[in-house]
Image (cartoon, rainbow, N blue to C red):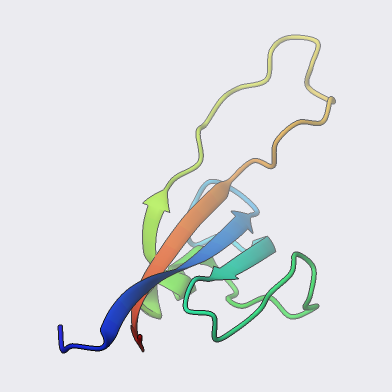
Length: 96
């Protein structure tokens, strides 16, 4: 890498309708380690991608898949973590 250049990580968290990467995005959050963009959860009514596959096709790399944990008997209707959470990353080069 040329002098004066550094790599920074961008993170994209997508909550999908099902555990399949080609299912619809129903929630999202983005973090930009380059400092070029500043996002807040819920700062847009427009989803960044229609599906998780669309993010892959745009160069995002999956770094975490959701755990497929069945609910314990009697807890089917309680709230907890959001299911079907995928974490994606991109590495971008910035000037230091």
